[in-house]
Image 1 (tube, rainbow, N blue to C red):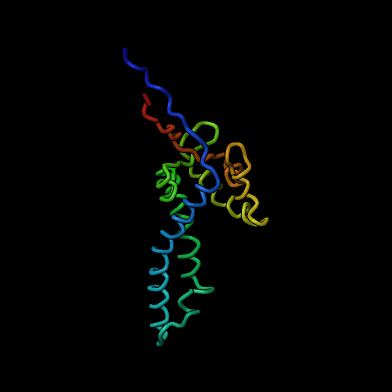
Image 2: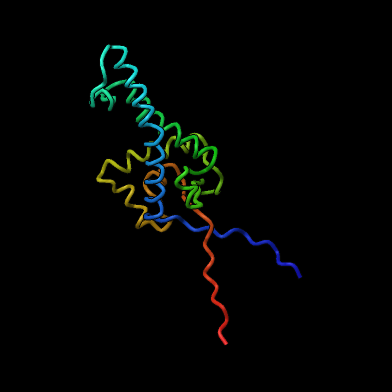
Length: 164
């Protein structure tokens, strides 16, 4: 007799796994943005007639800094959430960000609200991010605002060989 297909069992992704995913995403963003910022800042400084100093390379206060350090990461993260349901760090863990009510992929509005919700979560001493560690559904404030959850397939318990 064939086994009937079972519904996929999911679990909420906890605090430390999400920290790991976030660190992986940060490293990837740095790998992309640091050379880009250096190239763009270097060209701006070269057009003025001198080698860029450290303040110029950081892009402090410039349009370049705004685009590379703030707009690029926001657009990248939101697009990953919409098209892949996860950033690369979450993909590494097999995790997805989905609608909390339906389990469906995020709408563009949900993705944008979730991203903006990070700022709400960070401002009061990062309490909104730490909330993931105490919430039953492992939701941070940004998840609650956007009505999202982070889930992955439940890992099967290890099978032990029969002892005789």
